[in-house]
Image (cartoon, rainbow over all chains, first blue to last red; front, side, top):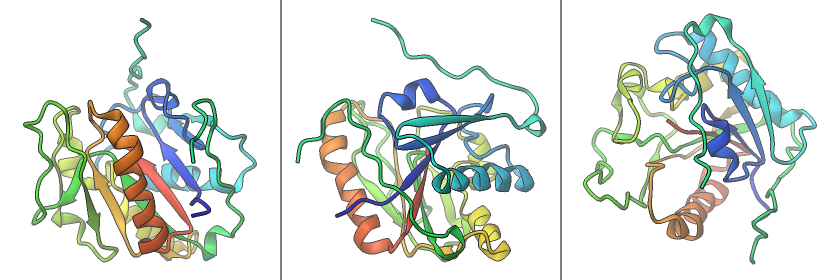
Amino acid sequence: MKGVPTVLITVSPEVSAQMRPPRALYPKGFKIGNSVGRPGMRDLQKQVLRDALGLLTQNTRPGEFVTIEYPEYGEQYEPPRVKKL
Amino acid sequence: MTISRKCVPFTPFDRELAKSTIAIVSAGGVHLKDQEAFNIADDLGDLSYREIPPDVDSSQLMVTHHHYDHSDADADINVVFPIDVLRDLEAEGLIGGIARKHIGYMGYTMQLKAMYEGTAREIANEIDKGSRADAVVLTGG
């Protein structure tokens, strides 16, 4: 297996970073359960997926998280934090 | 092969999106309504996964996962498993097509080693050998 390119869409970037994904999109302020947007907001969902797929073709450094804001999402949420021991 | 804990296992994407097939692998507990639900009664989590066909009717998908509020996904599965969105992007010509196989699993487990060394590798193999995907979109809840 030579590997398959992946792109992660995460609403919990700090938590996801612990797993060292190759490249990731954080749609800023989206709540857990809304990785691609809110129900029925197809234009927003398409834009999030376009942006995520776009990371595949950009020269991201391994492990990079790209944060993008989507004002049309509406109310913003704080992402969960990793508890420090 | 042992991967360094500090290593980011990066695979470059060297194709054109418009000629590429894309698969979805979701940790959001997504599965077909007629597939066995994930076992949420086990405090250790469920290490199994479900194969989802490319021509799935998204109304036949559901979520079994008790570690996030999936009421929005219940209303529109695309918020965690964007299969209809991918179809739209295929129709637009942004991507070449939908991969032959997609995967749903429950991304909660207390058995991290078994998930990392077992389930994750099995899923990677399903994608590599079975889906013919050129790239994968990973989603959580």
